[in-house]
Length: 83
Image (cartoon, rainbow, N blue to C red; front, top):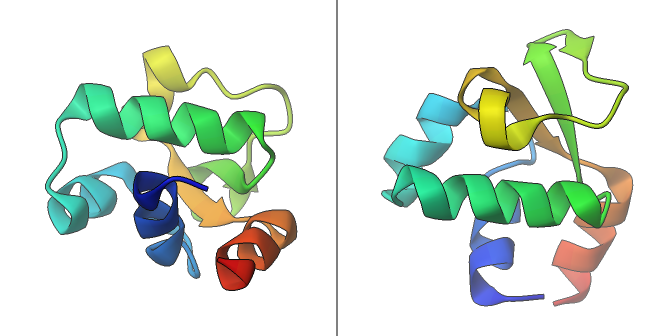
């Protein structure tokens, strides 16, 4: 797990909006979207259309990532806590 992946997962113990993550991590959009995609590919995060509506198909983070909400998955929490 990279340091960036660790830092991002650290913010996802609760459902968080893209804007919250951008503010807290102070990363450029390109970097944040890239790390979110990497975490989604590893199944370490779950994506949501809103706080209670999960994206069940492959999330289109490149095009819609700024509108999604995010939460660490069980697999992601286990990886985060093992680091």
